[in-house]
Length: 276
Ligand code: PDD
Image (cartoon, rainbow, N blue to C red; front, top):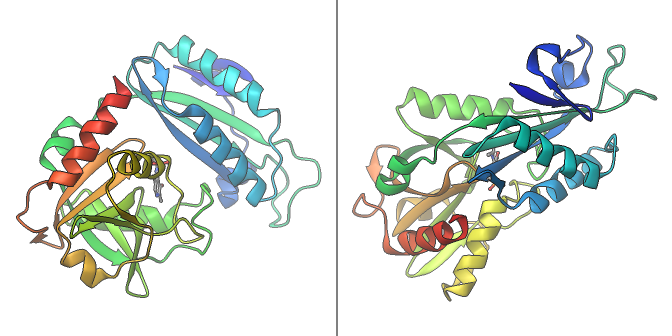
């Protein structure tokens, strides 16, 4: 397996992580996951723009220009031979003697590699179940930071309950999933949490809103409550790896009839057209 390490493509075995790397000690860094279909990255520029924004928000300079990173990632993709899967990229603030404050002269470390992974076709066609749980994460969920414990604990709770995703609830409001954005359909209107500091501004969320606009499906980018979630006509999640995936059961109760709804299906079909 080859990896991008700083700006070199090397064998995984040659990559060395220092014990004092700040990603390792503090989760001090940012990341992205880009989907690859037919050997091609999907919405790569949007993901790299978000990576740049995340870095800026944590006051970290990228070690080299974004255009160079894009070139390296394309080379990595080619070298890896990946056809269908994920491209993972993380940038740590770098290595320095342990101290919470920023180091004055550490070079941020870029790491990237590919992971083969088929599309989740069964989940996309049949839908998945979810649980609800309290959103215990920090207040800058718009930053795609390597600090993921709040998400890890929520996802594990879902898995412990035999579910695919944890839907997060903050002060009675649905924010997003542990690693996905959440939408509901109510009386023909699509609802999703506004893109503020409480959610990650998902690329797939953005694609979905664009498709909804083209299909003239009315959208409300407004917070909705846990109660509204439970009385929704349809519910689905979006993410790079899960695409647009129906949620058919929440906390053991079926969403409406317990099968994927018609608006979810319409959005899924339009999304699939973009992949092919
Ligand atoms: N997760 N919300 C959170 C908290 C996420 O971690 C993600 C992505 C999303 C969806 O964003 P996008 O559509 O840009 O993938 C929403 C990635 C896939 C992950 O951590 O694996």
